[in-house]
Length: 572
Figure 1 (tube, rainbow, N blue to C red):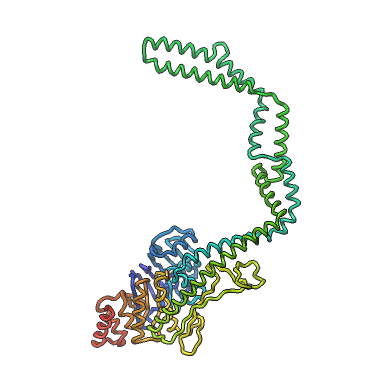
Figure 2: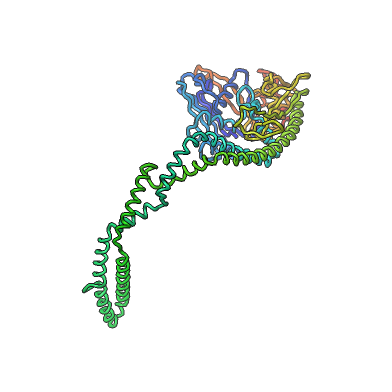
């Protein structure tokens, strides 16, 4: 929900700040006071295109900022992931428009693109009236509303899994066909390179092992001489370290007989003697294994030379050579057995397509049942809103593919290929007729602006439990209605506010009386300039505003009395 809104230097607004609450917020004001400016500022915050005309004369930039509590908005998680943003339960959204024409967007002080802002706006706010945030007027959103209303999430999830598998297999086959010509052209080259590498047949880590062995063989004379010297010093020479340590140990034993304080030193002397003896044994064993093998030396040098040639041809390192061998080996086998691989994938695709088709049919059946339920609920709501003779239908169609769509994902129904879509095989669209004798037409083509708003309200009321948009804004939803119908509109908005935060701009006292919060838009003169202000009304101020809506600019005692009665009735 929108918890705070700040507007600075936007059109006639110099500065407005207000805290919004849950429930139904009504906004009233005289014609020309600036209600449309307020809606324009909200549209700007939600990703509408900016214009320098929006910047107040004399100001450097217009700034609109809103704070949204998104702790209960499930769909916001996908936006965070898609935009690699840090998840948060509160979003501060800011839009700045420069008088020079530049525009900047921020979410929690991090810059975002206009497209990202618009996507976020569509998640957070649905604006109905004379603006573009009318998701129910976009046919592409109807399937989502139907699915949210329904109770077939399991069937839909199973379809999506089958569709994903079908898509993966189809992409694999497409990739193979795209590579077919290249594979066949390069098969001879692959065969030559495989023979070239396999003639040497290098093993993983073999080069490192050979280089280590080569180093030992090339330095065998040094190793033999040095180990002999070490053995002489440690063990076999006159006054060797071992003999000297034995003498030291004996001295410590004599001292220990006199004073036990030498016990630790005696133990260390014995330990040192053991260490020296182990060193000597290791050196003796190593020296006994030293070979002066010139044949093995030549063999290693020849093999490392072969490795060098391979590295020059295939990547610069033996790891690259082995990786290249693996890759071209797979490519060669694929080229050799291409038709068999295609046949195997075709069999997998047929199985996946059959599974996808079965699951698509299950989803379609559920959607048809759900569509009938929505039709009944919306027709009932339209009667309450003064559209008594309406017809409303939920249509499900599918796309039949022709030969030009060979690579499209599809299921088979009889002799037809039906396009498979990420959410099923159905194109869902809402149709309506509000006049007797007229056939239903696509919802987007409904002519009357007043009817559009009421139809939106009826749809939102029917979908209240499933629609996840936290804030709904209705701009002059009462156009063309009055009296009893106006009260019905107000009651419907009030009921809808149990599931969404509602902001409604209205001229009707019946709706204004039902608001949990009442804001008044006013035009005033300040420092010889016209400004638009927004005030929260309480108590008698609110009574007078409702009375103005009832009786006009001149508020009478009778008007005040009627306003109080209307507000009292609204509470009941």
